[in-house]
Image 1 (tube, one colour):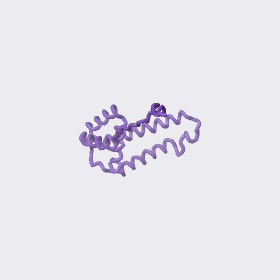
Image 2 (image 1 turned 180 degrees about the horizontal axis):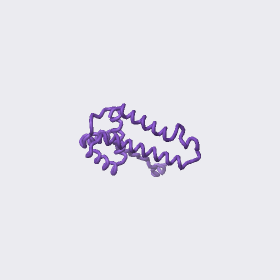
Image 3 (image 1 turned 90 degrees about the vertical axis):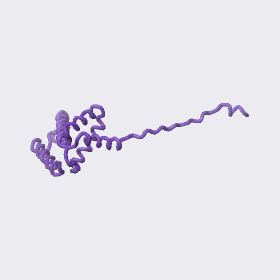
Image 4 (image 1 turned 90 degrees about the horizontal axis):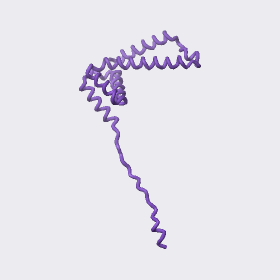
Length: 137
């Protein structure tokens, strides 16, 4: 999916939202109403999730999507990082077509190498006060 198509979808969504809610949202006119604010945040989160899922559906084939959903059950942080990486690549137009399961495995390895934590062990040796030194006088 090209950048132009994504930008067109984004602008279309923004136009729909503005026509639906007007130029000022209800929350801006009535700042004391927190229930509408929560509902608006929920709707925005749901729209974002739908948009992410639609982009991933266009980018990944079925086996790759299944692997990614399995990964999200086990390691949600890593799955989110891979999703962000795929969406970023799709927005930049770096993906030539649908990514297969083997391609997703390669991407998983890249992300794992980038986020790999190095474990270090540091010993703090403390000097012990020896009472024998004082008795030598």
